[in-house]
Length: 82
Image (tube, rainbow, N blue to C red):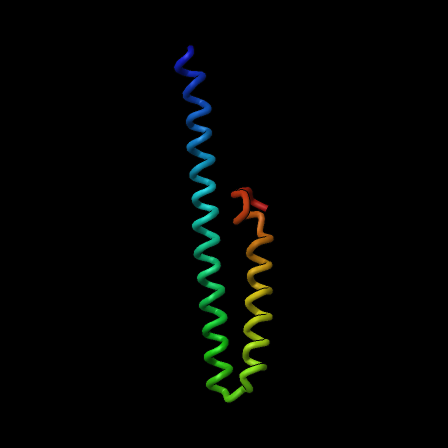
């Protein structure tokens, strides 16, 4: 019985570590996506001869908004479904 009770916390701990790793990986991938979206948006605006300060402002607003949505997502913060 001792072996059975010691195995359960170890499995739970491994499951928790896996969820943490998956959460961190999901955030890194999502953050890379936000950077990609900002870069593409900036390139499109510059190609369309939009003023530099307007391009910077639009890209900044979009990036901050997407990042805020990412960091508030319960699915990426603790692995639970919202």
